Amino acid sequence: MPPEQGLRGRLLALAAQGDAAAAELGDGLSRAAGDLAAHPLLGPAADALEPGDLAVVAARALTARVVAGALDSDSPLVPGGDIRDAVVARLAAALGAPDAGTERGVRSLVLRVAGSAASRAAVRRRRALTEAAHPAAADILRYLSRGEAVRADLRTLVAGLRPPVALVGHSLGGIIALDTLISAPLPQVRLLVTVGSQAPFLYESGSLPTLEHPAPLPPHVPDWLNLYDRRDLLSYLGEGLFPGRVTDTAVDSRQPFPAAHSAYWTNPAVFRHIVERLP
Image (cartoon, rainbow, N blue to C red; front, side):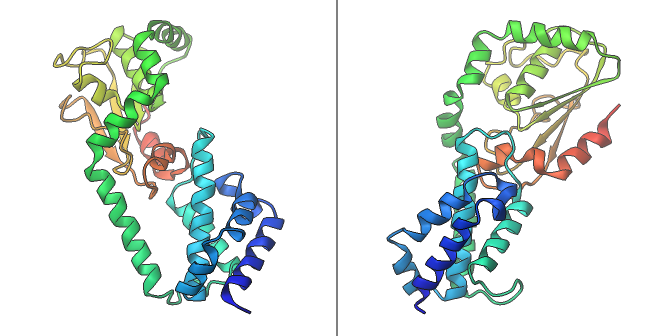
């Protein structure tokens, strides 16, 4: 059977099974497999690659399509690299790849190196990417212009909690938590955790509503743990801006940007770091 015909048959069989083979990533595998089976580039790809390499490339393409769908739908949870790789291996096996641990060929190695190089290039272009993406975050802009009501609601919520309280905020949530703690003392709160946060960036750019750069953090702001991912171009460090007041801790989801910005909550290391700092 020609490689193109064999892979097309496996893709159609995978589509017929629904989304179960990539359930950890969300919905969309069945449609992605059907679309790839009908794609006009499937034939040229089959002519250019060894069958095992072709299966791996197809599995990676399907996985990327499902993850992209989760990002497009604003899913709050994007799986980390370990889960993603497990799905790729499962799909590759279903599409005819050799068993894990066997040689997959030079072409697969080249693809992995090229993907890594693309990620490094994105990190080098962090400033340009951030300036392009950050102003488009309408929710953050809305908060910056009309955030007092949100801070008041958070203060009311915390006032009814028994100490010690830990505030944990991801992205905009971390901005709101820090901003609220700066604006007025909340003695119940003993730990602030920001995850994938732009709060240091806003402070340094003069955009944080309650603290103007270069003023220091007020003494009443509690212990602050700031978790970031080097591939998350919307996560920023705070130690250089607030010496002795914040601990920056790196985690690695093994996902590229922008998936890295939503992959923290499927990374066990995030929870370990938080638990270690709980009051």
